[in-house]
Structure formats: C-alpha cells, structure tokens
Length: 166
Image 1 (cartoon, one colour):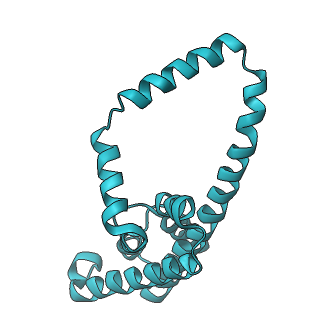
Image 2 (image 1 turned 30 degrees about the vertical axis):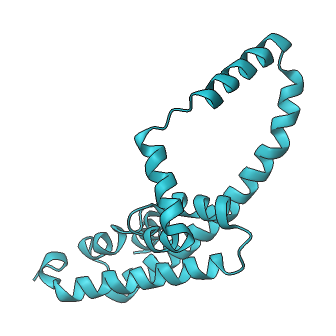
Image 3 (image 1 turned 90 degrees about the vertical axis):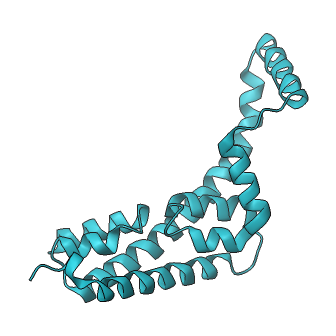
C-alpha cells in the first residue's frame, strides 16, 4: 500500500493528468488517491520550481567562466554563427507556438494549462523563467493544481464505470 501511495505521488509530480485515473485503476481508495495526487502535484511543482530557479542561476554564473576556457578560434566561430542567426532568424513551428502562447495568454495561460496540457516540470520552469518576479505565482499554481484535481475527481464521479470495477 505504501509503495502504491509513493508511486502515485511520484507519477503526479511529473504527469499529473493521468495520475488520478491511474490511481483508481490500480485499486487505491478514492481518498488516498486524491491525497496522493495533491501531495505529488503540489510537491512536484515546488520541487521543479525551485530546482529550475537554481539551475537558471547556476547557468548564468557558469557560462562566463566557461567562456574563459574556450579557445579563441571557437569563440570566433560562435560569434559568426550568432551573427548569421540574428540576420536570418528561423522560427520553427514549436517556437512560434510558444511565442504566440506566451504573448496571447501569459501567466494565466501557463497556470491554467500546466497540470493538463503542459507537464508540471515544464510549467514550473516556464513560470520561473518568465514570471518569477511576480508575487503570487506559486500560490496561483498550487490553486490551479487543486482546481484540476477537483475537475478530475468530478469526472471520475460522473463516469465511475470507467475507473471502478464492479
């Protein structure tokens, strides 16, 4: 039982949308499954949010140090590549989609879509990268996770034949 609980917590930290139905299918009680999904979703978001903050800060500190050790001919080659890229910037379909999404929906879009379209690690990284200076980002994301848990539990109660075996 403890192994199932831990398994559901770890799954909810990464792939939130499938976790509550999965917990019901593997035979967990509804209350236990709900608690495991909430703990895993919120804990996973907090873990990945603060981990991404440290990774971003570390990357910004390490990059100048690494450039000291790179030979001059490689630096020159990188500079010419950057100049070409600035002149003829190529936008892929994925880059255009992310830019349009961020411009159109911003922080509310990231908050609402993180648990079910974006995964929790990706949503935590995007929230930290672009909106970390906002005051209540963590609270809004936790409320979104709780809200999506309520929606999923409502779906499970509307269609119990899918998730419960009689």
